[in-house]
Length: 251
Image (tube, rainbow, N blue to C red):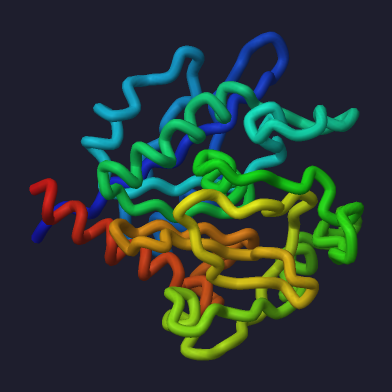
């Protein structure tokens, strides 16, 4: 039997006490194990970064996770960051170059929440720093006083693009998703197509327009209790299938 595919997960750089730590949320690691049946490999976000081309050459997939931090806005050339906005320059310096390189090397990419925003910015797109203050959009943030199950419960439906990857996974034109984000896609990155939109019109998922390689980025959190939600599980299974193909090609 072939070995399970290796999926890289870039870490967040966190200061704990006097020392910097590299961290990845366990829910993402578990989703790779339980939802994709792949082997997670944590990628440290270092300054300077590792040799990313060499790294991707050893991997079968890449999962860009959500995080408490946001991309520094100078990467998409708009207004300065607002007071209290959390940033992680080391992660920005790792993930933003990884996206175009993964596309070039045809390494499958699944991106979640901050990961979607990284994909969009890496390909020349821009973001709303505060979706709830941008025009007619709803407030997509979670209730921090609610339980985790309530925070990650269904928040709104998304309209899925006809013939898109997500519509095929869902087997329906709509699906219910959770919503735990303050930022969102403003201008779409080059080479991306819209896979899903929220009822207020906000872009909720994108993929590669060219179909040259597997890339799916979603604004919600399909990793949450992935085995209990058929739509979320289908997302990780589609990613896993692309990773297995990549692993066979590498072998």
